[in-house]
Image 1: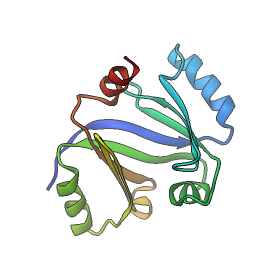
Image 2: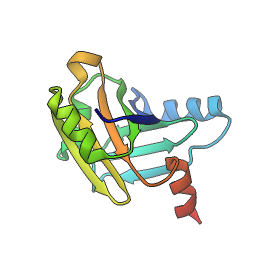
Image 3: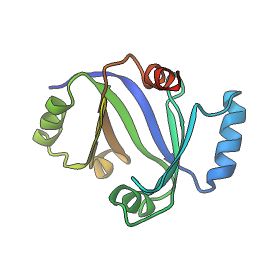
Image 4: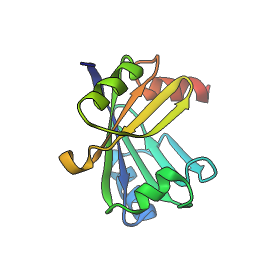
Length: 145
């Protein structure tokens, strides 16, 4: 069975995206590390604060994309929890062998992610991610220069 290296982040679909972001940034005492309009690719806008906070808030902007359509159909609040694993391919096989169907797969090299249908059993989806850095913050800071 695959090994979880650490909690990476959780995905939250707030009722009011702007209000949530304003309040959460105040709670953190800082602005989000990254805000992106990913409407073309995924049909969402995201506000992301990686390690140590581990939060990705999103708003659906285009329900023709598979992930955003899935998000739009769910209740607001925590949508999914993401864990970092050493070998995503192995983890996918293990998750499927215990009965969890892979719903989405993303290859945004060097970041690989897979979303699994654990909602009925756990109350939220599980996403597993693999990347060659200690945390997403490390990668994000490298990309920011």
